[in-house]
Length: 264
Image 1 (cartoon, rainbow, N blue to C red):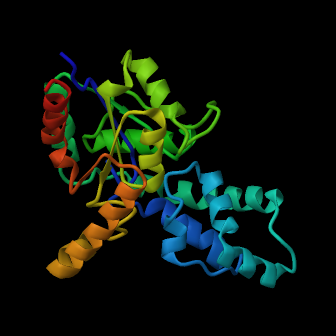
Image 2 (cartoon, helix red, strand yellow):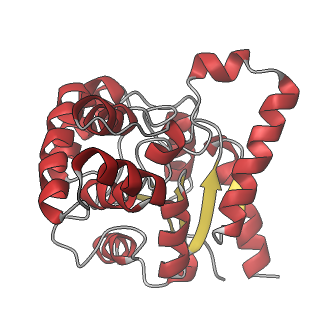
Image 3 (cartoon, rainbow, N blue to C red):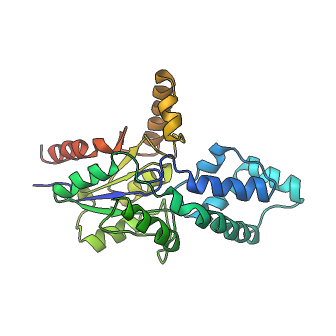
């Protein structure tokens, strides 16, 4: 009998930090406030899930942002700019990280149910190990823990490359990619799962792709919320997601479906 043995969860926007706001605010400060290059929230969010230095490169590489940089500084951006901006980003992020480790509603109960079923719970992230040294203990203090954490440090590449997933599988002794479900809230998460050959699943509510606070979500008119959710689900499906959850609470039922499908 084939069955799912392991779930690998992203952190910010999937398990903690509803709406994925900690890195967003730091990116906006670095680009708009410090460098005088106005970026939209959508531009700041689009590469989310990548290692953060790659995220800065991805924003700078956007045609509109590159043009603004050139107009302001009279030259194209360089790797020196990337390194300087990343150092500033880290300063802003570390100053606020512990305030953005609150588990998203329903996540703790869902993980408890997964463990009750005997599944291992791994995790990947776009944060460095030093950043997770802040997030992980604060999340644990509030009741959220995982069995394994892999950061991009020391690996050939972070997302969308598959190495963090493979490292989780090795650490947790999971022998087959068909026994793994990867869940995340960004396009980089989806592509990470696709590139690893595992079941790659998106989650909408609380996600970077939705980009809403809990208060904004609660106040959003039903028809507008439904439209936004459809758009997020469509982006995730286009990126290769095999399924898109509304909330993580739907994950155990989806795993039941996968197990039935694999043994039909």
